[in-house]
Length: 65
Ligand SMILES: [Zn+2]
Image (cartoon, rainbow, N blue to C red):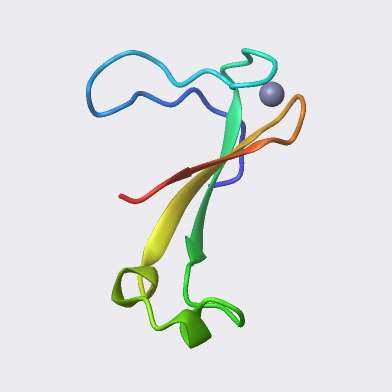
């Protein structure tokens, strides 16, 4: 799913960019277990992150969903 979309948050309301207030994001699922994370021995890091990339300014918003 890489088409720009609005994001409805679990507690209600739309996600808006922290930087430019845009409400259109690209949706990605990224592995948190990457080089540089695993050596820190963080169990919680061995999971997927839900990431929304602002289509306007490219800021990444991370969610642990
Ligand atoms: Zn933005």
